[in-house]
Image (cartoon, rainbow, N blue to C red; front, side, top):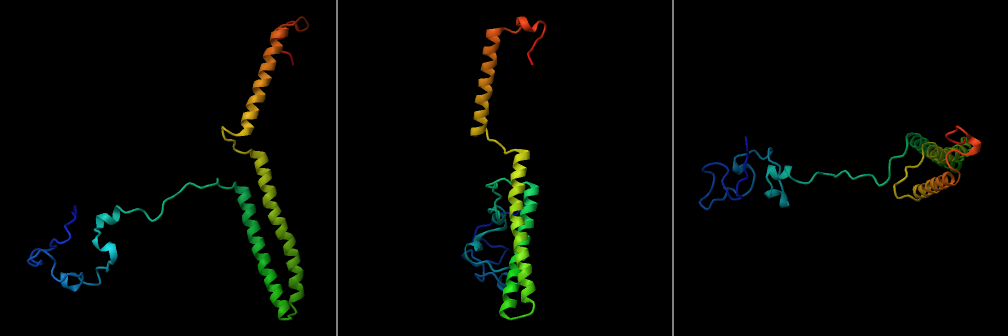
Length: 185
């Protein structure tokens, strides 16, 4: 069932057109043989698009690569925990403020618990920072080939290698004091 696009002025059914080749009734509605509830009214430039042209259109969104890599799982868990604690602390502080304004008996306990929640929220935010530092220390930071740290390590290895070669050249592999040993340790 291949459907081909018809010219804009072509008849859709035999005998429904007028003498100049246009549809009878000009508009899309009950006059062209279809029920008006079945055909959605298309306005603007969508009027001229066929079903095939709808499928060839650009998608609704395009996935783009992330600007930064995803946070490691422990760090993300700590961050979510910190956000929840901070949001609850803010809600508690607002409740304490409104209870104080209303001169409610609940104001004093709410202020005390808000102070305690502020300490816990500060701990939660510091926990994110500490967790991130620990993760970076244990798992290392991904080093790019052009990074300064890798270049410095390469230079240090090259210098050690040249020093070993120079030592071997001056004393030789087998020295008089190390008879039978292949390496000095």
